[in-house]
Image 1 (cartoon, rainbow, N blue to C red):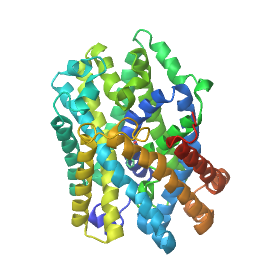
Image 2 (tube, rainbow, N blue to C red):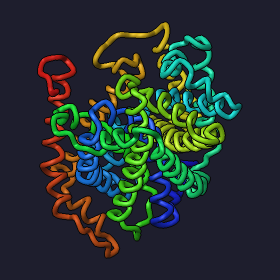
Image 3 (spheres, rainbow, N blue to C red):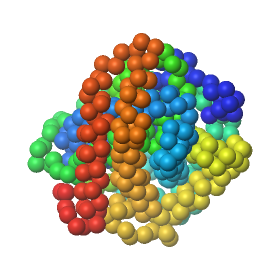
Image 4 (cartoon, helix red, strand yellow):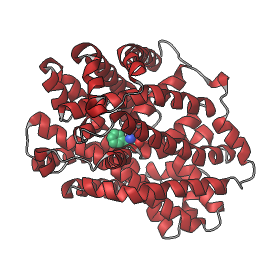
Length: 462
Ligand code: PHE
C-alpha cells in the first residue's frame, strides 16, 4: 500500500471496491494456469468436486477469519499477530515469508504468458503449436532461444510488477480490474463456447465434470487444498492486510462469500476452457504444468480468427497475473516495513533483490541449475520446489496455526464479534466456529502429515 495509506490507513470504497480489489488479487495464474493442470493431473471431475467442497468450507472460513483479524487489528499480518499476543508474532512472520517465495516464480510464469502474448501479437501463433505440444518445454529449457529467452521475459514481467509497486497503483488496480476482469470472463466464456464445436469435445467435457470415484484418493485432497490456499490468496497474510483496509460497516461474510465465488467461478471456467480440449488433443497429464501453454494455442490455431483472439486473451491473462503479482510484491514490501522497520524505499530495494535473485535461479532451474528432488520438485526444478514448499507445507502449517491461534489464544468470538460488528449478520456463525475450532485444524493436520509421509515415500496416499 502506498505511503499515505499506511500512515492514514486509507480504505476501500465500500463492499464492491473491497471485493473487486481482493478478487483482483485472488484471480490470477492460480485460476488460469494452476487449477486446470492440477485438474488434469488428478483425474478430472473428482478433483473439481473436491475443490468446490473445500472452497466453500475451508476456503470460505479461512477467508472470513483472515479478513476479520485484519480489520479488527487494522494491521498487516506480522503486526496483527504480534500485537494480539507478542509470543505469537512468529506466525505472522512465517505467513509473510510465503509471498516472498511465491512472487519470484510467479513472475517467471508471468514471463511465459508475456512471451506467449508477444509471439501471438506479431502473428506467430503457429510457432507455439509447432512440435506438437513440445514447444513450451523446449522454450523454457532453453532449446529455442537459449536460457536468455525465458530470462528476458521474466525480467520484463518482474520489472512491470516492480514498476506498479514503485508508482503505487492500488487504487488504479481497483479501477482497471473493474473493466479487465469482466472482459477476461467474457473472453473465456466465448472461447469455451467455440470449443463446443470441436469434434470429440464432449468426451473432454465428460472427463472434466464426471466424478470418477476410482480417481479419488488422498492425493486429490492434497492437491485441492494446496490449490485453495494458492488461488484464494489464503494463509499468507494477504487477506489480513486487505481486511485492515476494509471499512467497518462492510459485511465481512458477504465479502468473503463474493470473493470466494468469483475466484472459484473463474477457476472452474478456466478448467472448462483448458481441460476438455487438452484431453481430446491427447495432452492430458503429459503437459504437466505447461498445460495452459500447450493446449490453448492448439485451440486458437483451429479457431476462425484465432490469431486475433489469441493475443487479446494472453494480454488479459498478463493483466490478471500482474494484479496478483503486484499484491504479492506489495505484501513482501510491507513485511520489511512492518517487520524490520525499514523505510518503504529500502524495503522495495530489498524485495526486488530477493525477487530477481530467486527468479533467476528459478529460470535457470530449467537449464543449468536443474535439480532432481523428485517428487518434491514436480519435475519442474526450482519452480516445482518453491511451489511444493509453499503450497503443500508452509500454507497448511500457517492455516493450522491461524485456526489454533484464533480458537485457543484470542478466542473465536474475537473474529465473530468483528464479523457481526455494526449490526451485520453472520449467517454461518455456528458452522464457522466448528470449522475454525475443530474441523480445519484437524483435517489440515491430517493432510499435512499424510502429504509429508507420501512425499518421503513412507506411506502412499494414492
Ligand atoms: N491467488 C493468486 C492467483 O490465483 C495468487 C496470489 C496469491 C496472489 C497470494 C496474491 C497473493 O494467482
